[in-house]
Length: 87
Image (tube, rainbow, N blue to C red; front, side):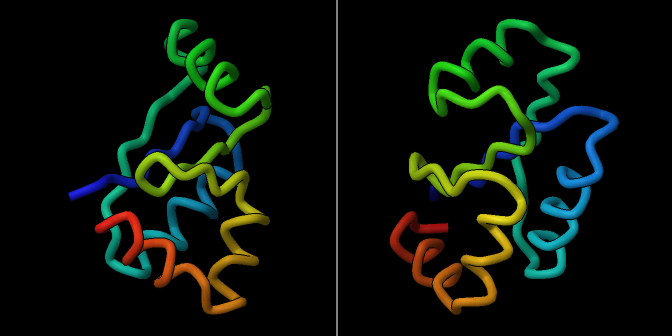
């Protein structure tokens, strides 16, 4: 089974919103705190070419940030992405 990865920091309100949205759907998240681990921050930038958080992946597919996740949910596409990733 694939996982949902959430690159986050301890002080990011959008990260909290993303985590809460996924939790309300009963989804487990692999949260990576990039402010505590510079290597993970470098990995996030390498994977996304972005330096802002949150950065969210469903399986290996990059969702983007919280507003991207919210749009995916509101459009009804989130369950499709989850099913495609085997989440």
